[in-house]
Amino acid sequence: MTTTVTPTDTTDTDGFVASLRAQAQRYHSEHPFHRRMNEGLLSRRQIQGWVANRYYYQENIPRKDAAVLANCPVPDVRRRWIRRILDHDGTAEGQGGIEAWLRLGEATGLTRQEMADDRHVVPGVRFAVDAYVTFARTRPWVEAVASSLTELFAPDLMARRLAAFERHYTWIDPEGLAYFRVRLTQAPRDSEHALEVVLDRCRTPEQRAAAVAALSFKCDVLWSMLDAIDLAYPD
Image (cartoon, one colour):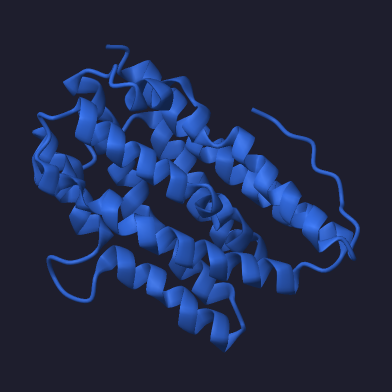
């Protein structure tokens, strides 16, 4: 998927936010694989393949956020951004989003070992996730923050995903769905902070165009992951 990004008027904050939110049309919730998931049309093997490959994304998110911290010179932003790492890694063994995703995998019939050793990760997913981490490490930190704004779309996505799993995939232990429930509150908090940072730091048309392009890139990462998973798990 491609998009054309044009600079926005520096005085038009509403237009800038609208340009960011417009990327929702390219969010992976619209991918055919994701639509079939929400309609209850995926097989056990497809669900397991999605969970195993998505784990590679989950385990790399703290590394992406650490890159933002490393590049960000603003203490207040760092103090708030570090919560994302703690949310994923937890503050102790057996806590955090990565642990919750491992439990989701177990609830679908996967073992921790086969998720942790990445044996199911397909090349397209690995390439997309690694590109995202590299983006956060090498691009200006504000652009990396902007790329995280897919969370503007995540609360509705997460609520629909949770409802779909509870309705259609009853063979999954409900306790394994805890990750989705927690993200219902974490994602709005995180996206609110990221949007504050982007609005404060992106003032020129060029900066705003770069922010929209960064968000577009993140949408491409997520879409490409589902392309690869869909190809690897046709049924």
